[in-house]
Image (tube, rainbow, N blue to C red; front, side, top):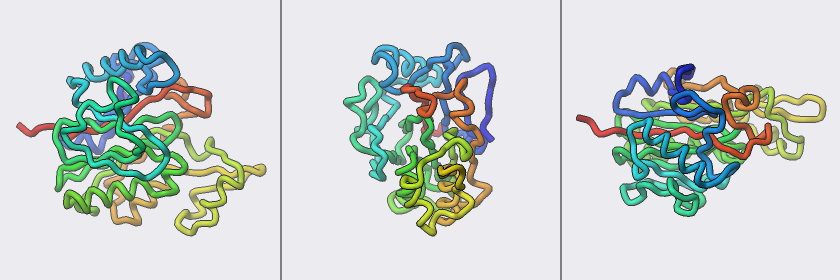
Length: 265
């Protein structure tokens, strides 16, 4: 379960809080101090200046600077970017400078905060304690079908020597099973694919309901992650629209999840 501090607009994953070398967070509608209802991290649903002000407030609350962050231009595909110091600050001040056409950010570098934005899609964070590498993944319907979380884990293993069996995964707030309905044509590739178990979708009144979080969880388990190393949020962004932005509730704004490996002193 996520740690939810009512005095703060930021929440954190318990499993990552056990690793002091890792900074992790998920934003909400509220500011980090717990005020307001429009803490928008995406350059949409408001003015660019409002978004920039929110990002600066987020950075200040975390003790970071603009150059510590890396944002991506998410496109619902499975493209991977290995982030280095040359990428520091990309996408923070302007959407035009974000990493192009990418939904998976991975790094082994210190003090680089990888960010994924969401408003119903599933934010996923990965951390490898043995290789000290991390990933931030945007897993919407298409990304989940493509297996982006598992691909990110494989990337950490192949590029940084991360051990899959020791890897930690955090599946963040997103639209829940009972709220994520799609038409049968849209769902067909899931329901006809044996990779997705019958427990991850349901038929009701001519619609199909998809459980994206469980699909991601199952992909990671199949890859070799241990159940005790996966933390899956039970927060539905549509049901919790008072705390999170939700595209299904017509929000254009975005919350975000981030992960950073800190310098060891």
